[in-house]
Each structure stands twice: as structure tokens, then as C-alpha cells.
Length: 215
Length: 418
Image 1 (cartoon, rainbow over the protein chains, first blue to last red):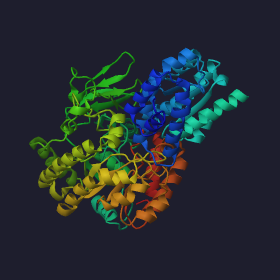
Image 2 (cartoon, rainbow over the protein chains, first blue to last red; image 1 turned 180 degrees about the horizontal axis):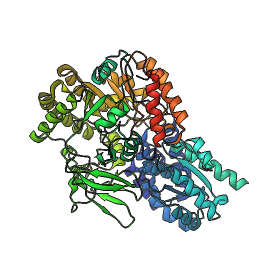
Image 3 (spheres, one colour; image 1 turned 120 degrees about the vertical axis):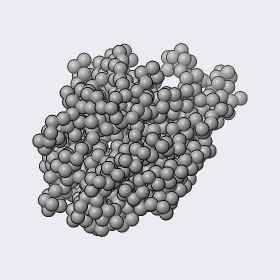
Image 4 (tube, chains in turn brown, orange; image 1 turned 45 degrees about the vertical axis):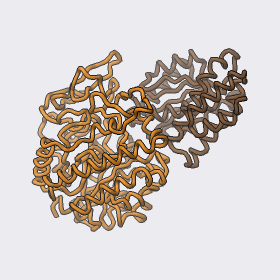
């Protein structure tokens, strides 16, 4: 029998090899993929987020845990689709046009996946129309925009405007983040939230999806 | 006081006649080439294309006439080659965001199908490109060229390709450049290279045609945790080479240099840090101490550490391992309040930066807001010396020239219009 506690620990400790091996073993034994995610992987990533917030974990540890989680998730994803599992929410994420920096965005994307979200990662240097297309195609309810540069921050505004012009703005919550971004800037450009780090962004996305599903 | 005396007085933690100011002596205290062009126009200087002195961030050369107009006190000595591995010479005309500029001869670019500008290591158009500027962008980012990693065959020598004994050509260059810099009467800041440990801008090696070893940014960060021994072996050998090079360079530039840019590795993020203080002390501290100790034993040079972000937790260690100067002093990051930094560390560490925020105030604020912030920072940081005015990192493209002028005027105002 696969020791599933080891999956929790492997994700928490950023041990990709063990995370993949335990997941493979569990699947061979017909374990329920939804249970693996909900009982072991989501709690592990939640603990990773907590440790990051209280500065016990830093970027390297976060990257390692995200990689372990992704390794396991890659094995589980096809099975989830088969079972028609409902994600926590559907997120479209990307670094805005003109900006090639993606480490922060990648961390947010990984933590969102670890939080049970279905994540469509559009990569870096993403033009507004690509966000619009992806929101429509994926039926997303959250859009996450990242920027590292002062010169690319204005592209967050144009992306939000593009969502408005496409008639999608009321359908999605927009979260923004990145080094030069502030809560005040988020407000000015009409975003719904600002995540000062990856862990905060995930909590915010979760709260927003919950609130909108209750609305 | 002349410019150099002013800077040396500040570096000795005494108050000079006025606050010394630096723009352009390093690749982290510079200005985007379009801003240099705008300032030249503002001051009515001779109309001529500005040289792109640092093509990675597209920083403009601040020439003597602009230094004079701005009241700058520091002259930089730069390596012979750029971040993309080609010599900084043989200037040719280029047009960039509507501005005529000059770029080095081997600044060779192509445009891809998205309209992005690609640049090539050593200017070699047959090699894979190593830098990309998005269409309409203002500077390059590194293109990651990471070969698949075979754990069993990882060899630190592959990550040491760029750390070589300084060549006779480089020594001749430094000798000439240091002498020319000293002749300006300004304090001399030298950028010799080879002394940054794990600087994430340099790890991907945009200057190499075919980098090997660990070159991917995320992989490198993870390696500081999972391949600690490998990183130690790189740093250990790198520091041995660096010490030999520093000795050779000191032999040709001697006391003509006043301060040396040692390392630009960023340890801070906006709200936290990239590692714990325990990791810093275990992984980086010994190598910094080795270089700083040698420099302080053998030269009069002050040493300059650049790290963006929230680095308050490391400052005690920076001082303990021998750094004299901290830059850019990112006051907007967590725990980096100016008054706290000055009172806790100001007697032992020179703050070279911290003058005005380049994420918000300088690019997006009003001239009045710029003035207010600059006056406030000058009041806090200048007390008892130990302060060289500089914005917090490079002045970014699109910064309004009125704000730059407001910044310069505010420093002058604080200095009693001296």
C-alpha cells in the first residue's frame, strides 16, 4: 500500500522524485485522484504557503514544493478530467504585455494549482486580447495579472479595459501583483484585489471565488 | 571640496560640504538612455546621440558635460566587454523609441515574428540569441539557455566558464580607464567584474555563446537548497580566481580607484528575502569575507554591495563580512525605513542610494512629490556623512524629465544651492 502521508511530506519538502513515485504507486493501487489532491496535496501546499508567509520558507523552497506538486499533478490531471472533477475555480494567469518576467507569476500559478484551481498559464508578455480569448475559452472566473516593471504596469490597465470592452469584466475577478504594484495602483486601475505575495494571492482568489459563488 | 574629496569624506562617515551625487558610475546607479537624452536636451547640451553604455538595461553614458550640469561626483570604470560579451567600442548609430543613440559595433540584433528584438552573445548572429527585448520594450531580458541536467555529470567547472584569469588586454584597459577616471577629479567607482556570487542576472550568462552547467534562474534558486555543495564549489573556485585577478588589477590601477562594485546579487524581494540569514551566512558570507578582507588589507578601496529589496535582516552580516557601502537602499521594501536604517547602521555602512523611489515617486509622482521625498531622504541619510545621493536603482524609461529635474533641484536645495 502506498503511504500517502509520504505524498504530503514530499510536496511539503519539495521532493519531486518521491512525490511522483508515491502518486504512481497509489494510482497503480486504484487510489482516488481527488482524494490524493484534496487530502494530501492541497494541505501540503497550504502548509508551504504558511511557511512562506512566516518566513520559514523562501523562494527556493517554494519552487521545489511547486515542482513536486506539479510532478504529481501531471499524473493525476488526465484522471481528474475523466471523472469530471470540479476545480476550486478557473484561473487565467499571465505576465502582461511587454514584460518577460515570470518567476513570481509561475509561483502564483503553482500555488493556485496546489490550491485546487484549474490554471491556464498564458506565460509572459501576454497581450490583452490573449487574456480575453482565454477567459472566454476556459470560462474563467479569476484573472491574475503580473508585472515586474514600472514600464509595463500600464499594460495591467489596458488588459482590464480589454476585458471590459469584451463584456467579460463582470464575469471575472481580476487580481494583480508584482514588485512595483501596490494596493492603491490595483484600486486605480479597477482590479478586484492585490496579492503582495504568492500565498496571499491564492487565499484572495479562493475568497473571491467563494464570495461570488454565494452571491 | 572637489568632487573626490566630497565623496571620500562621505565614505569616511563625515559630513562633506554638500551631499555627493552619483548617476552613471555603475550598472545599478544609471539612467535609461532615453532619460539621459532628455536630460541633455533639458540642460541645453550639445545635440549628439547618447551612447548606450550598458546594452542589457539600455543605460545611457553620462558624459562630462551632463555630469557637470547635474552636479555629479563619481566617475565609473567599466569592463571592456558588455553583458552580451562584445566590446564596448566601435560605435554605430541606432534609433530607439524615437531617439538617436549610439550602440557598440557588435550590438547585432534581429527581429522575430512577434516583433521582439533579439540580441546575440559576442554579437555572433550565428549563435542562439541570449537577450530579448519585447516589441516596444525598453531593455533586454536574458533568454534562458539551459541544457538538460544530468545530475551525475554536473561539474562546477561548467558554471565557472566566465570566471577566467584577467587578460593582458583587460589589464591594459583598466589601467587606462582608471587613469582617465582619476583625471576627471571625481571619485572613481570601479566595476571589474568576476566578484558577484550567484547574481541571478549573470547566472544565465548572456555573454556566453553556449553556457553549460546550471543556467536556468529557477533551477539555480532551487540548487542553492538542493545542490549546496555544488554551489559552494563554484563560489570557492570563483573567489580564488577573483583574488588573483584583484591582485593583478590592483597592480595596474592602484590607488586611482576609490570604491569597487563587488556584488549585485539580490537577496531581497519587495516584502521578504530570497533566503534566510542562516543560508546567507553559510553560503555567501565566507566568500564575501574572503574578498573584502583581501581588499581591505591590500588596497584603500571601499567595497560596494548592491541588493534590491527587503535586506534589513542581512545588513549586520553585510557589515560583518566587510562591505562598506550598501546600494540601492530600497526604502519601500519591508523593514527598510530610512530613519531606522540610518540609526541602526549609519555609523558603519554608507548608504549609496535611497534618494528617491524609482517604482512610484520618480516615474509616476508629481515634481512636488519628488521634491518632498528627496528632501526627506537627504535629511535622514546625510546626517554625519555616510550618504551618496542616488535614486533607488536605475532611472527607468518613461520617467518624466520634469521629475528628474525636480530631483536634482531638491538635492541642490538641500545643499543650500551649493
